[in-house]
Length: 338
Length: 266
Image (tube, rainbow over all chains, first blue to last red; front, side, top):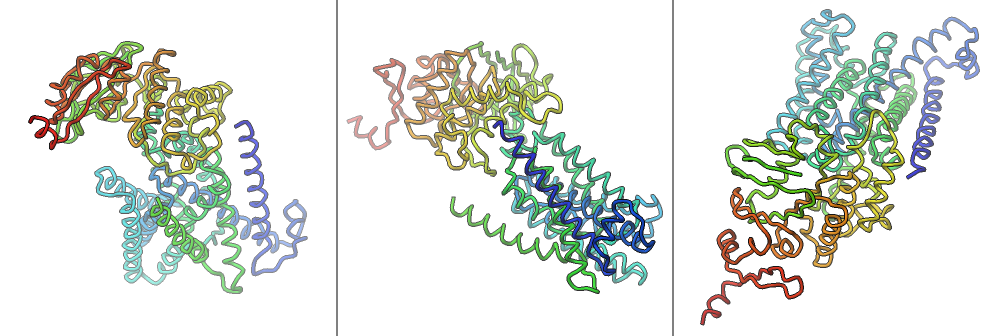
Protein backbone atom coordinates (compact mmCIF):
# COMPACT_ATOMS: atom_id res chain seq x y z
CA UNK A 1 0.00 0.00 0.00
CA UNK A 2 2.87 2.33 0.83
CA UNK A 3 4.40 2.08 -2.63
CA UNK A 4 1.22 3.06 -4.34
CA UNK A 5 1.89 6.78 -4.41
CA UNK A 6 5.34 6.19 -5.90
CA UNK A 7 3.88 3.89 -8.52
CA UNK A 8 1.26 6.49 -9.43
CA UNK A 9 3.80 9.28 -9.68
CA UNK A 10 5.96 7.10 -11.92
CA UNK A 11 2.97 6.33 -14.17
CA UNK A 12 2.21 10.03 -14.42
CA UNK A 13 5.84 10.87 -15.14
CA UNK A 14 6.02 8.35 -18.00
CA UNK A 15 2.78 9.68 -19.46
CA UNK A 16 4.04 13.26 -19.36
CA UNK A 17 7.26 12.23 -21.11
CA UNK A 18 5.20 10.55 -23.85
CA UNK A 19 2.98 13.63 -24.06
CA UNK A 20 6.01 15.86 -24.61
CA UNK A 21 7.41 13.46 -27.21
CA UNK A 22 4.15 13.32 -29.16
CA UNK A 23 3.84 17.09 -28.97
CA UNK A 24 7.35 17.48 -30.33
CA UNK A 25 6.51 15.08 -33.15
CA UNK A 26 3.38 17.00 -34.03
CA UNK A 27 5.24 20.29 -33.78
CA UNK A 28 7.76 19.15 -36.37
CA UNK A 29 5.15 17.87 -38.82
CA UNK A 30 3.36 20.08 -41.27
CA UNK A 31 3.02 21.00 -44.93
CA UNK A 32 5.67 23.70 -44.58
CA UNK A 33 8.73 21.58 -43.87
CA UNK A 34 10.74 23.16 -41.07
CA UNK A 35 14.12 22.11 -39.82
CA UNK A 36 14.00 20.67 -36.27
CA UNK A 37 16.89 22.94 -35.32
CA UNK A 38 14.85 25.98 -36.30
CA UNK A 39 11.95 24.79 -34.14
CA UNK A 40 14.15 24.27 -31.09
CA UNK A 41 15.77 27.66 -31.56
CA UNK A 42 12.42 29.43 -31.87
CA UNK A 43 10.97 27.60 -28.87
CA UNK A 44 13.91 28.64 -26.76
CA UNK A 45 13.19 32.26 -27.60
CA UNK A 46 15.74 32.63 -30.37
CA UNK A 47 15.20 34.79 -33.40
CA UNK A 48 14.09 33.44 -36.76
CA UNK A 49 12.20 34.27 -39.92
CA UNK A 50 8.79 35.82 -39.32
CA UNK A 51 7.04 33.11 -41.36
CA UNK A 52 8.64 30.31 -39.37
CA UNK A 53 7.66 32.08 -36.21
CA UNK A 54 4.08 32.46 -37.38
CA UNK A 55 3.80 28.83 -38.47
CA UNK A 56 5.10 27.60 -35.16
CA UNK A 57 3.26 29.84 -32.74
CA UNK A 58 0.08 30.65 -34.63
CA UNK A 59 -0.59 27.35 -36.40
CA UNK A 60 1.19 24.39 -34.88
CA UNK A 61 1.36 25.26 -31.18
CA UNK A 62 -2.30 26.27 -30.75
CA UNK A 63 -3.24 23.08 -32.53
CA UNK A 64 -1.28 20.98 -30.05
CA UNK A 65 -2.67 22.85 -27.06
CA UNK A 66 -6.17 22.44 -28.43
CA UNK A 67 -5.51 18.72 -28.89
CA UNK A 68 -4.31 18.57 -25.29
CA UNK A 69 -7.42 20.31 -23.95
CA UNK A 70 -9.97 18.48 -26.09
CA UNK A 71 -8.33 15.05 -25.81
CA UNK A 72 -8.12 15.50 -22.05
CA UNK A 73 -11.71 16.76 -21.73
CA UNK A 74 -13.24 13.98 -23.82
CA UNK A 75 -11.26 11.28 -22.10
CA UNK A 76 -12.11 12.69 -18.67
CA UNK A 77 -15.80 12.81 -19.61
CA UNK A 78 -15.55 9.20 -20.72
CA UNK A 79 -14.06 8.06 -17.41
CA UNK A 80 -16.67 9.91 -15.37
CA UNK A 81 -19.59 8.61 -17.44
CA UNK A 82 -18.23 5.07 -17.26
CA UNK A 83 -18.07 5.23 -13.47
CA UNK A 84 -21.52 6.82 -13.15
CA UNK A 85 -23.23 4.34 -15.47
CA UNK A 86 -20.98 1.44 -14.42
CA UNK A 87 -20.36 0.48 -18.02
CA UNK A 88 -16.99 0.71 -19.79
CA UNK A 89 -18.64 1.24 -23.18
CA UNK A 90 -20.30 4.57 -22.48
CA UNK A 91 -18.61 7.82 -23.50
CA UNK A 92 -19.80 11.15 -24.89
CA UNK A 93 -19.96 9.79 -28.43
CA UNK A 94 -21.64 6.43 -27.82
CA UNK A 95 -24.22 8.03 -25.50
CA UNK A 96 -25.18 10.49 -28.23
CA UNK A 97 -24.00 13.48 -26.20
CA UNK A 98 -21.56 14.51 -28.92
CA UNK A 99 -24.31 14.08 -31.50
CA UNK A 100 -26.65 16.26 -29.47
CA UNK A 101 -23.95 18.89 -29.12
CA UNK A 102 -23.28 18.83 -32.88
CA UNK A 103 -26.99 19.23 -33.54
CA UNK A 104 -27.11 22.14 -31.12
CA UNK A 105 -24.22 23.83 -32.92
CA UNK A 106 -25.77 23.22 -36.35
CA UNK A 107 -29.12 24.61 -35.20
CA UNK A 108 -27.43 27.65 -33.74
CA UNK A 109 -25.56 28.26 -36.99
CA UNK A 110 -28.56 27.88 -39.28
CA UNK A 111 -30.83 30.02 -37.14
CA UNK A 112 -28.27 32.80 -37.26
CA UNK A 113 -28.07 32.95 -33.48
CA UNK A 114 -24.31 32.82 -33.37
CA UNK A 115 -24.00 36.52 -32.72
CA UNK A 116 -25.97 36.41 -29.49
CA UNK A 117 -23.14 35.65 -27.10
CA UNK A 118 -20.20 36.44 -29.32
CA UNK A 119 -17.37 33.92 -29.12
CA UNK A 120 -19.21 31.92 -26.46
CA UNK A 121 -22.38 31.32 -28.45
CA UNK A 122 -21.28 28.15 -30.25
CA UNK A 123 -19.99 26.49 -27.08
CA UNK A 124 -23.26 27.50 -25.43
CA UNK A 125 -25.30 25.82 -28.17
CA UNK A 126 -23.09 22.76 -27.99
CA UNK A 127 -23.61 22.61 -24.24
CA UNK A 128 -27.38 22.97 -24.63
CA UNK A 129 -27.48 20.12 -27.12
CA UNK A 130 -25.36 17.94 -24.82
CA UNK A 131 -27.51 18.74 -21.79
CA UNK A 132 -30.71 17.87 -23.67
CA UNK A 133 -29.36 14.41 -24.44
CA UNK A 134 -28.12 13.83 -20.88
CA UNK A 135 -31.42 14.95 -19.35
CA UNK A 136 -33.29 12.66 -21.72
CA UNK A 137 -31.07 9.69 -20.85
CA UNK A 138 -31.23 10.37 -17.10
CA UNK A 139 -35.03 10.52 -17.20
CA UNK A 140 -35.03 7.14 -18.91
CA UNK A 141 -32.77 5.68 -16.23
CA UNK A 142 -34.62 7.20 -13.30
CA UNK A 143 -37.92 5.79 -14.47
CA UNK A 144 -36.08 2.50 -15.07
CA UNK A 145 -37.22 2.45 -18.67
CA UNK A 146 -33.59 2.06 -19.70
CA UNK A 147 -31.20 -0.62 -18.54
CA UNK A 148 -27.56 -0.28 -19.42
CA UNK A 149 -27.74 -2.13 -22.72
CA UNK A 150 -30.78 -0.05 -23.61
CA UNK A 151 -28.85 3.06 -22.69
CA UNK A 152 -26.14 2.27 -25.23
CA UNK A 153 -28.64 1.44 -27.95
CA UNK A 154 -30.55 4.63 -27.24
CA UNK A 155 -27.32 6.60 -27.34
CA UNK A 156 -26.40 5.18 -30.72
CA UNK A 157 -29.91 5.95 -31.98
CA UNK A 158 -29.64 9.52 -30.69
CA UNK A 159 -26.37 9.82 -32.61
CA UNK A 160 -28.11 8.61 -35.78
CA UNK A 161 -31.05 10.94 -35.32
CA UNK A 162 -28.78 13.91 -34.62
CA UNK A 163 -26.60 13.25 -37.62
CA UNK A 164 -29.69 12.88 -39.82
CA UNK A 165 -31.03 16.12 -38.43
CA UNK A 166 -27.68 17.79 -39.09
CA UNK A 167 -27.80 16.48 -42.67
CA UNK A 168 -31.30 17.84 -42.99
CA UNK A 169 -30.13 21.21 -41.78
CA UNK A 170 -27.22 21.09 -44.22
CA UNK A 171 -29.45 20.30 -47.17
CA UNK A 172 -31.57 23.36 -46.57
CA UNK A 173 -28.79 25.70 -45.53
CA UNK A 174 -26.93 28.27 -47.58
CA UNK A 175 -23.75 27.25 -49.29
CA UNK A 176 -21.58 29.48 -47.11
CA UNK A 177 -22.79 27.76 -43.92
CA UNK A 178 -22.18 24.30 -45.36
CA UNK A 179 -18.47 24.13 -44.82
CA UNK A 180 -18.79 25.16 -41.20
CA UNK A 181 -21.38 22.51 -40.44
CA UNK A 182 -19.54 19.79 -42.33
CA UNK A 183 -16.50 20.62 -40.25
CA UNK A 184 -18.40 19.89 -37.05
CA UNK A 185 -19.60 16.54 -38.23
CA UNK A 186 -16.15 15.13 -38.78
CA UNK A 187 -14.03 17.15 -36.44
CA UNK A 188 -10.71 18.92 -36.89
CA UNK A 189 -8.18 20.66 -34.70
CA UNK A 190 -7.39 23.32 -37.30
CA UNK A 191 -8.30 26.21 -35.04
CA UNK A 192 -5.83 29.04 -35.35
CA UNK A 193 -7.45 31.58 -33.09
CA UNK A 194 -5.88 31.78 -29.64
CA UNK A 195 -8.97 32.72 -27.66
CA UNK A 196 -10.93 29.45 -28.14
CA UNK A 197 -7.76 27.53 -27.44
CA UNK A 198 -7.31 29.33 -24.14
CA UNK A 199 -10.98 28.82 -23.34
CA UNK A 200 -10.67 25.08 -23.95
CA UNK A 201 -7.49 24.87 -21.87
CA UNK A 202 -9.03 26.65 -18.90
CA UNK A 203 -12.18 24.54 -19.10
CA UNK A 204 -10.24 21.28 -19.35
CA UNK A 205 -7.98 22.02 -16.39
CA UNK A 206 -10.89 23.31 -14.31
CA UNK A 207 -12.89 20.22 -15.25
CA UNK A 208 -10.07 17.97 -14.10
CA UNK A 209 -9.86 19.84 -10.81
CA UNK A 210 -13.61 19.56 -10.19
CA UNK A 211 -13.54 15.86 -11.09
CA UNK A 212 -10.84 15.33 -8.48
CA UNK A 213 -13.18 16.62 -5.76
CA UNK A 214 -15.26 13.53 -6.51
CA UNK A 215 -12.55 10.91 -7.00
CA UNK A 216 -13.50 8.97 -3.87
CA UNK A 217 -17.17 9.15 -4.76
CA UNK A 218 -16.34 7.66 -8.14
CA UNK A 219 -14.35 4.88 -6.47
CA UNK A 220 -17.30 4.08 -4.22
CA UNK A 221 -19.70 4.11 -7.16
CA UNK A 222 -17.79 1.16 -8.65
CA UNK A 223 -19.59 -0.93 -6.04
CA UNK A 224 -23.01 0.25 -7.18
CA UNK A 225 -25.20 3.15 -6.11
CA UNK A 226 -26.61 1.56 -2.98
CA UNK A 227 -23.20 0.57 -1.64
CA UNK A 228 -21.89 4.05 -2.47
CA UNK A 229 -24.65 5.51 -0.28
CA UNK A 230 -23.60 3.12 2.47
CA UNK A 231 -20.10 4.58 2.19
CA UNK A 232 -21.45 8.05 2.78
CA UNK A 233 -21.61 9.29 -0.80
CA UNK A 234 -24.41 11.66 -1.69
CA UNK A 235 -25.04 9.77 -4.91
CA UNK A 236 -27.76 11.99 -6.35
CA UNK A 237 -25.71 15.14 -5.94
CA UNK A 238 -22.53 13.54 -7.29
CA UNK A 239 -24.36 12.23 -10.34
CA UNK A 240 -25.97 15.57 -11.05
CA UNK A 241 -22.76 17.57 -10.78
CA UNK A 242 -20.64 15.15 -12.79
CA UNK A 243 -23.22 14.75 -15.55
CA UNK A 244 -23.36 18.51 -15.93
CA UNK A 245 -19.56 18.64 -15.95
CA UNK A 246 -19.34 15.94 -18.63
CA UNK A 247 -21.95 17.78 -20.72
CA UNK A 248 -20.08 21.05 -20.37
CA UNK A 249 -16.76 19.55 -21.40
CA UNK A 250 -18.30 17.61 -24.28
CA UNK A 251 -20.41 20.54 -25.46
CA UNK A 252 -17.41 22.84 -25.43
CA UNK A 253 -15.22 20.29 -27.22
CA UNK A 254 -17.76 19.60 -29.92
CA UNK A 255 -18.43 23.28 -30.52
CA UNK A 256 -14.71 23.95 -30.97
CA UNK A 257 -13.49 20.95 -32.90
CA UNK A 258 -16.55 18.97 -33.93
CA UNK A 259 -17.80 15.58 -32.89
CA UNK A 260 -14.54 13.71 -32.43
CA UNK A 261 -15.56 10.22 -31.44
CA UNK A 262 -14.28 7.41 -29.27
CA UNK A 263 -11.49 9.27 -27.46
CA UNK A 264 -13.38 8.77 -24.20
CA UNK A 265 -13.77 5.08 -24.96
CA UNK A 266 -10.37 4.01 -26.29
CA UNK A 267 -8.23 5.91 -23.84
CA UNK A 268 -9.74 4.89 -20.46
CA UNK A 269 -9.94 1.31 -21.71
CA UNK A 270 -6.18 1.16 -22.10
CA UNK A 271 -5.36 3.33 -19.12
CA UNK A 272 -7.21 0.95 -16.80
CA UNK A 273 -4.89 -1.84 -17.96
CA UNK A 274 -1.77 -0.15 -16.61
CA UNK A 275 -3.04 2.34 -14.04
CA UNK A 276 -5.75 0.25 -12.35
CA UNK A 277 -9.26 1.29 -11.41
CA UNK A 278 -8.60 3.79 -8.64
CA UNK A 279 -9.92 7.16 -9.82
CA UNK A 280 -7.20 9.03 -7.96
CA UNK A 281 -4.77 7.95 -10.68
CA UNK A 282 -7.30 7.02 -13.35
CA UNK A 283 -8.64 10.57 -13.78
CA UNK A 284 -5.33 12.28 -14.42
CA UNK A 285 -3.82 9.39 -16.40
CA UNK A 286 -6.86 9.31 -18.65
CA UNK A 287 -6.69 13.05 -19.10
CA UNK A 288 -3.04 13.01 -20.13
CA UNK A 289 -3.45 9.85 -22.23
CA UNK A 290 -6.45 11.38 -23.98
CA UNK A 291 -4.28 14.37 -24.83
CA UNK A 292 -1.55 12.05 -26.13
CA UNK A 293 -4.04 10.05 -28.21
CA UNK A 294 -5.64 13.08 -29.83
CA UNK A 295 -2.40 14.92 -30.54
CA UNK A 296 -1.02 11.72 -32.07
CA UNK A 297 -4.13 11.11 -34.19
CA UNK A 298 -3.96 14.71 -35.34
CA UNK A 299 -0.31 14.30 -36.30
CA UNK A 300 -1.28 11.23 -38.31
CA UNK A 301 -4.24 13.03 -39.86
CA UNK A 302 -2.22 15.98 -41.06
CA UNK A 303 0.77 14.07 -42.37
CA UNK A 304 -0.37 10.72 -43.72
CA UNK A 305 -1.96 11.89 -46.96
CA UNK A 306 -0.09 15.11 -47.65
CA UNK A 307 -0.86 17.53 -49.14
CA UNK A 308 -4.44 16.64 -48.19
CA UNK A 309 -5.20 16.95 -44.52
CA UNK A 310 -7.57 14.31 -43.13
CA UNK A 311 -10.11 15.33 -40.51
CA UNK A 312 -8.86 14.02 -37.15
CA UNK A 313 -12.33 12.59 -36.39
CA UNK A 314 -11.80 10.12 -39.23
CA UNK A 315 -8.62 8.83 -37.60
CA UNK A 316 -10.05 8.54 -34.07
CA UNK A 317 -13.20 7.03 -35.55
CA UNK A 318 -11.24 4.32 -37.35
CA UNK A 319 -9.13 3.46 -34.30
CA UNK A 320 -11.99 3.83 -31.86
CA UNK A 321 -14.72 2.11 -33.80
CA UNK A 322 -12.64 -1.01 -34.26
CA UNK A 323 -11.72 -1.04 -30.59
CA UNK A 324 -15.34 -0.51 -29.58
CA UNK A 325 -16.38 -3.64 -31.46
CA UNK A 326 -13.48 -5.57 -29.94
CA UNK A 327 -14.30 -4.42 -26.39
CA UNK A 328 -18.00 -5.19 -26.87
CA UNK A 329 -17.26 -8.73 -28.06
CA UNK A 330 -14.82 -9.34 -25.25
CA UNK A 331 -17.34 -8.12 -22.72
CA UNK A 332 -20.00 -10.36 -24.20
CA UNK A 333 -17.70 -13.38 -23.93
CA UNK A 334 -16.87 -12.53 -20.31
CA UNK A 335 -20.55 -12.26 -19.45
CA UNK A 336 -21.24 -15.58 -21.15
CA UNK A 337 -18.43 -17.37 -19.33
CA UNK A 338 -19.78 -16.32 -15.92
CA UNK B 1 -28.63 2.72 19.57
CA UNK B 2 -31.42 2.52 17.04
CA UNK B 3 -35.06 3.32 17.33
CA UNK B 4 -37.83 3.13 14.74
CA UNK B 5 -41.00 5.06 15.50
CA UNK B 6 -44.15 4.40 13.47
CA UNK B 7 -42.06 3.71 10.38
CA UNK B 8 -43.94 3.02 7.16
CA UNK B 9 -42.39 2.69 3.72
CA UNK B 10 -43.84 2.12 0.31
CA UNK B 11 -42.82 1.57 -3.26
CA UNK B 12 -45.27 3.46 -5.48
CA UNK B 13 -48.58 2.94 -3.67
CA UNK B 14 -47.82 -0.50 -2.29
CA UNK B 15 -46.88 -0.50 1.40
CA UNK B 16 -43.96 -2.75 2.31
CA UNK B 17 -43.50 -1.63 5.92
CA UNK B 18 -46.43 -0.71 8.10
CA UNK B 19 -46.07 1.13 11.39
CA UNK B 20 -42.90 -0.50 12.71
CA UNK B 21 -41.97 0.39 16.29
CA UNK B 22 -38.78 -1.10 17.67
CA UNK B 23 -35.81 -0.16 19.80
CA UNK B 24 -32.44 -1.84 19.59
CA UNK B 25 -30.19 -1.38 22.61
CA UNK B 26 -26.43 -0.86 22.43
CA UNK B 27 -24.65 -4.18 21.96
CA UNK B 28 -27.72 -6.03 20.71
CA UNK B 29 -27.53 -8.86 18.18
CA UNK B 30 -30.88 -8.82 16.45
CA UNK B 31 -32.07 -11.02 13.59
CA UNK B 32 -34.79 -10.14 11.12
CA UNK B 33 -36.74 -13.02 9.58
CA UNK B 34 -39.84 -13.27 7.46
CA UNK B 35 -41.08 -14.65 4.15
CA UNK B 36 -40.01 -13.24 0.78
CA UNK B 37 -41.45 -9.78 0.29
CA UNK B 38 -42.22 -9.28 3.97
CA UNK B 39 -40.10 -6.11 4.10
CA UNK B 40 -36.81 -7.35 5.61
CA UNK B 41 -34.55 -5.60 3.11
CA UNK B 42 -36.75 -2.51 3.18
CA UNK B 43 -36.22 -2.34 6.92
CA UNK B 44 -32.46 -2.15 6.31
CA UNK B 45 -33.02 0.45 3.58
CA UNK B 46 -35.06 2.58 5.93
CA UNK B 47 -32.13 2.68 8.36
CA UNK B 48 -29.56 3.49 5.63
CA UNK B 49 -31.72 6.21 4.06
CA UNK B 50 -31.74 4.46 0.70
CA UNK B 51 -35.55 4.60 0.77
CA UNK B 52 -37.69 7.53 1.88
CA UNK B 53 -39.97 6.95 4.83
CA UNK B 54 -43.64 7.43 4.06
CA UNK B 55 -44.31 8.01 7.74
CA UNK B 56 -42.51 7.91 11.05
CA UNK B 57 -38.90 8.49 11.96
CA UNK B 58 -35.69 6.61 12.59
CA UNK B 59 -33.41 7.67 15.43
CA UNK B 60 -29.75 6.76 15.67
CA UNK B 61 -28.40 7.32 19.17
CA UNK B 62 -31.31 9.67 19.78
CA UNK B 63 -30.67 11.76 16.68
CA UNK B 64 -33.13 11.86 13.82
CA UNK B 65 -31.71 10.15 10.76
CA UNK B 66 -32.62 12.91 8.31
CA UNK B 67 -30.61 15.47 10.27
CA UNK B 68 -27.45 13.47 9.54
CA UNK B 69 -25.56 13.70 6.26
CA UNK B 70 -24.83 10.51 4.31
CA UNK B 71 -21.24 10.84 5.44
CA UNK B 72 -22.05 11.21 9.14
CA UNK B 73 -24.35 8.22 8.87
CA UNK B 74 -21.66 6.12 7.19
CA UNK B 75 -19.24 6.94 9.99
CA UNK B 76 -21.54 5.11 12.41
CA UNK B 77 -23.43 2.56 10.33
CA UNK B 78 -21.90 0.02 7.93
CA UNK B 79 -23.79 -2.32 5.64
CA UNK B 80 -22.95 -5.68 4.13
CA UNK B 81 -25.38 -6.78 1.46
CA UNK B 82 -26.01 -9.90 -0.51
CA UNK B 83 -23.07 -11.18 -2.55
CA UNK B 84 -22.74 -9.66 -5.98
CA UNK B 85 -20.18 -9.56 -8.77
CA UNK B 86 -17.93 -6.52 -8.91
CA UNK B 87 -17.75 -4.77 -12.26
CA UNK B 88 -14.18 -3.70 -11.69
CA UNK B 89 -11.01 -5.62 -11.04
CA UNK B 90 -10.01 -4.62 -7.55
CA UNK B 91 -7.64 -6.05 -4.98
CA UNK B 92 -8.99 -7.06 -1.58
CA UNK B 93 -7.00 -4.39 0.26
CA UNK B 94 -8.31 -1.67 -2.07
CA UNK B 95 -11.85 -2.87 -1.47
CA UNK B 96 -11.31 -2.76 2.29
CA UNK B 97 -9.78 0.73 2.06
CA UNK B 98 -12.99 1.96 0.41
CA UNK B 99 -14.44 1.57 3.90
CA UNK B 100 -12.35 4.55 4.98
CA UNK B 101 -14.12 6.94 2.59
CA UNK B 102 -16.57 8.22 5.24
CA UNK B 103 -13.64 9.14 7.52
CA UNK B 104 -11.84 11.15 4.85
CA UNK B 105 -11.08 14.71 5.84
CA UNK B 106 -10.71 17.69 3.53
CA UNK B 107 -8.96 17.36 0.20
CA UNK B 108 -6.45 14.74 1.30
CA UNK B 109 -5.72 12.43 -1.62
CA UNK B 110 -3.85 9.59 0.07
CA UNK B 111 -4.86 7.51 3.09
CA UNK B 112 -3.54 8.48 6.49
CA UNK B 113 -1.65 6.04 8.65
CA UNK B 114 -4.77 5.55 10.75
CA UNK B 115 -6.75 4.58 7.65
CA UNK B 116 -4.21 1.93 6.73
CA UNK B 117 -4.22 0.71 10.32
CA UNK B 118 -8.01 0.39 10.41
CA UNK B 119 -8.03 -1.54 7.13
CA UNK B 120 -5.25 -3.80 8.39
CA UNK B 121 -7.17 -4.54 11.59
CA UNK B 122 -10.39 -5.22 9.69
CA UNK B 123 -8.61 -7.73 7.47
CA UNK B 124 -6.99 -9.29 10.51
CA UNK B 125 -10.33 -9.73 12.30
CA UNK B 126 -11.97 -11.32 9.27
CA UNK B 127 -9.00 -13.52 8.44
CA UNK B 128 -8.54 -11.92 5.03
CA UNK B 129 -5.00 -10.60 5.55
CA UNK B 130 -3.57 -13.42 3.47
CA UNK B 131 -5.93 -12.51 0.63
CA UNK B 132 -5.02 -8.82 0.57
CA UNK B 133 -3.30 -8.74 -2.82
CA UNK B 134 -5.72 -11.13 -4.51
CA UNK B 135 -8.29 -9.75 -6.92
CA UNK B 136 -11.82 -9.82 -5.50
CA UNK B 137 -13.23 -11.63 -8.53
CA UNK B 138 -10.75 -14.49 -8.03
CA UNK B 139 -12.06 -15.26 -4.52
CA UNK B 140 -14.60 -17.90 -3.59
CA UNK B 141 -18.03 -16.72 -2.45
CA UNK B 142 -17.18 -17.24 1.20
CA UNK B 143 -13.89 -15.36 0.97
CA UNK B 144 -15.58 -12.57 -0.94
CA UNK B 145 -18.22 -12.15 1.75
CA UNK B 146 -15.50 -11.97 4.40
CA UNK B 147 -13.74 -9.28 2.34
CA UNK B 148 -16.95 -7.25 2.20
CA UNK B 149 -17.36 -7.62 5.95
CA UNK B 150 -13.79 -6.39 6.32
CA UNK B 151 -14.71 -3.33 4.26
CA UNK B 152 -17.65 -2.67 6.58
CA UNK B 153 -15.44 -3.07 9.67
CA UNK B 154 -12.90 -0.64 8.22
CA UNK B 155 -15.65 1.97 8.56
CA UNK B 156 -15.30 1.47 12.33
CA UNK B 157 -19.09 1.46 12.71
CA UNK B 158 -21.09 1.26 15.90
CA UNK B 159 -23.98 -0.41 14.13
CA UNK B 160 -23.51 -3.15 11.54
CA UNK B 161 -26.37 -4.04 9.20
CA UNK B 162 -26.21 -7.29 7.30
CA UNK B 163 -28.68 -8.23 4.57
CA UNK B 164 -28.65 -11.98 4.06
CA UNK B 165 -24.88 -12.27 4.45
CA UNK B 166 -25.02 -16.06 4.26
CA UNK B 167 -27.04 -16.56 1.08
CA UNK B 168 -25.19 -18.65 -1.51
CA UNK B 169 -22.67 -19.82 1.11
CA UNK B 170 -22.11 -23.42 2.16
CA UNK B 171 -22.78 -24.42 5.75
CA UNK B 172 -19.14 -24.05 6.78
CA UNK B 173 -18.90 -20.50 5.47
CA UNK B 174 -22.31 -19.65 6.94
CA UNK B 175 -20.96 -20.62 10.34
CA UNK B 176 -17.69 -18.74 9.78
CA UNK B 177 -19.47 -15.52 8.81
CA UNK B 178 -21.94 -15.63 11.67
CA UNK B 179 -19.36 -16.79 14.24
CA UNK B 180 -17.37 -13.73 13.24
CA UNK B 181 -20.41 -11.48 13.57
CA UNK B 182 -21.18 -12.84 17.01
CA UNK B 183 -17.56 -12.47 18.09
CA UNK B 184 -17.56 -8.82 17.01
CA UNK B 185 -20.79 -8.33 18.90
CA UNK B 186 -19.52 -9.98 22.09
CA UNK B 187 -15.92 -8.73 22.11
CA UNK B 188 -16.27 -5.25 20.67
CA UNK B 189 -19.80 -4.34 21.61
CA UNK B 190 -20.77 -3.87 17.97
CA UNK B 191 -24.53 -3.60 17.63
CA UNK B 192 -25.77 -5.88 14.85
CA UNK B 193 -28.98 -6.09 12.87
CA UNK B 194 -28.92 -9.05 10.50
CA UNK B 195 -31.50 -10.16 7.95
CA UNK B 196 -31.53 -13.93 7.62
CA UNK B 197 -33.55 -16.27 5.49
CA UNK B 198 -32.53 -19.35 7.41
CA UNK B 199 -34.62 -19.64 10.59
CA UNK B 200 -32.10 -21.97 12.19
CA UNK B 201 -29.21 -19.58 11.71
CA UNK B 202 -31.32 -16.80 13.21
CA UNK B 203 -32.18 -19.02 16.12
CA UNK B 204 -28.63 -20.15 16.87
CA UNK B 205 -26.92 -16.79 16.53
CA UNK B 206 -29.32 -14.00 17.49
CA UNK B 207 -30.32 -12.85 20.96
CA UNK B 208 -33.51 -11.31 19.70
CA UNK B 209 -35.56 -11.87 16.57
CA UNK B 210 -37.98 -9.70 14.61
CA UNK B 211 -40.47 -11.77 12.64
CA UNK B 212 -41.93 -9.72 9.80
CA UNK B 213 -45.04 -10.67 7.91
CA UNK B 214 -46.36 -8.61 5.04
CA UNK B 215 -44.68 -5.44 6.29
CA UNK B 216 -45.93 -5.81 9.85
CA UNK B 217 -43.80 -6.68 12.87
CA UNK B 218 -45.57 -9.94 13.71
CA UNK B 219 -43.45 -10.96 16.67
CA UNK B 220 -40.47 -9.56 18.55
CA UNK B 221 -38.65 -11.57 21.18
CA UNK B 222 -36.04 -14.19 22.02
CA UNK B 223 -35.61 -17.14 19.64
CA UNK B 224 -37.63 -19.29 22.07
CA UNK B 225 -40.51 -16.83 22.01
CA UNK B 226 -40.57 -16.17 18.27
CA UNK B 227 -39.70 -19.53 16.75
CA UNK B 228 -42.74 -21.54 17.83
CA UNK B 229 -44.42 -23.80 15.30
CA UNK B 230 -47.58 -21.74 15.64
CA UNK B 231 -45.88 -18.44 14.69
CA UNK B 232 -43.99 -20.00 11.82
CA UNK B 233 -46.95 -21.89 10.36
CA UNK B 234 -49.06 -18.77 10.53
CA UNK B 235 -46.52 -16.54 8.80
CA UNK B 236 -44.91 -18.97 6.35
CA UNK B 237 -48.03 -21.08 5.69
CA UNK B 238 -46.11 -24.32 5.91
CA UNK B 239 -46.13 -26.98 8.61
CA UNK B 240 -42.96 -27.25 10.68
CA UNK B 241 -41.65 -29.10 13.70
CA UNK B 242 -39.68 -27.16 16.30
CA UNK B 243 -37.21 -29.00 18.53
CA UNK B 244 -34.34 -27.93 20.75
CA UNK B 245 -30.78 -28.03 19.47
CA UNK B 246 -29.21 -30.44 21.99
CA UNK B 247 -25.98 -28.44 22.23
CA UNK B 248 -27.12 -24.81 22.23
CA UNK B 249 -30.60 -25.66 23.59
CA UNK B 250 -32.02 -23.04 21.22
CA UNK B 251 -34.98 -23.94 19.01
CA UNK B 252 -34.33 -25.71 15.70
CA UNK B 253 -36.92 -25.59 12.95
CA UNK B 254 -37.56 -28.56 10.64
CA UNK B 255 -39.83 -28.30 7.67
CA UNK B 256 -42.12 -31.22 6.90
CA UNK B 257 -42.77 -32.26 3.27
CA UNK B 258 -46.45 -32.39 2.28
CA UNK B 259 -46.35 -36.09 1.50
CA UNK B 260 -45.01 -36.98 4.95
CA UNK B 261 -47.76 -35.08 6.73
CA UNK B 262 -50.29 -37.52 5.30
CA UNK B 263 -48.29 -40.64 6.12
CA UNK B 264 -47.18 -39.24 9.47
CA UNK B 265 -50.79 -38.74 10.48
CA UNK B 266 -51.54 -42.46 10.05
